[in-house]
Image 1 (cartoon, rainbow, N blue to C red):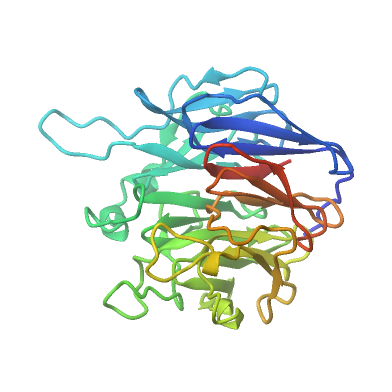
Image 2 (cartoon, helix red, strand yellow):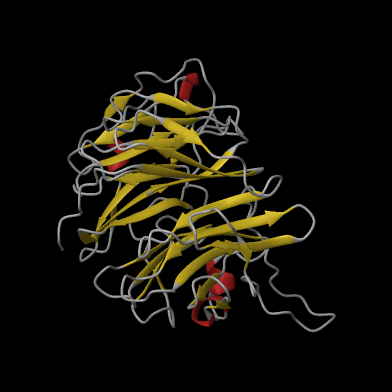
Length: 378
């Protein structure tokens, strides 16, 4: 694969929150920032994503207070918005029968570079949806949504995931648009090689301490899964039970989080990959004990970085407050393509923190926002 380009231009940070969305615009030095007015005031924005294929189309996965889940689309980088004509939804079932009902769209992924207009969406409860017209109309991916094992993979009616079970981490192999990975909380990591017609679990070696069976085939709780675009056979995972790496031909997860400091642990939500170095990865741990809702370990929030694919980790907390008890959700940490790489994280207490030097020093760019659900950078 070709090396990812280094950006020297302005940066925009797309922020989805519990009560609306924002775009934070920075100059090319990443020193001067301006926050937009709030968009979709009062609506939960689970994910706000720009299409890298045109650089101006944005989709917003929303849950409205009274009307339920929907999707919005902008073709002018957030200046104006239109609701999807047919947003993602499970088929209606005959009266008197039970079936899946969409609670919200949780995750958005633009399609392969060779397929302009294609996007994928993951939902709660776990479902996969596809559009071919840039988000105007959506259809369910029958190969997953109607798979005879879907209910078993997803835990049936016993899933206790807070805020509902979710499909997320939709990863498309840059070499082949029919080769994809998904993550499900709960369910685990799954793979398709035929564009979604069939799926197989990919969880060997990953712990599931909450299940009675050791090394189960499925039923795991991945929080975030990413493949590196320059090394697509390498995947990283931040799981409910640790941090993992997989070299795809081997087909087994290795717990690289065992090399994290024991008093911090390796439990968290986001995992962020360096755009040009497959060995460099950032995480943001949380207290993985019985404390709920989750907090920063000992009230000392920090990022951690590995530059050797998980053999060693370094703490990155300069500039972050302490004591502070916020956490960072799975979609709420991202990187830019500058050199050095910029990192951006949104907190459950409504602050947007950034680092222009790969986490060596953090600065608060915005505060007093609603709880931040997602952060994407372009």
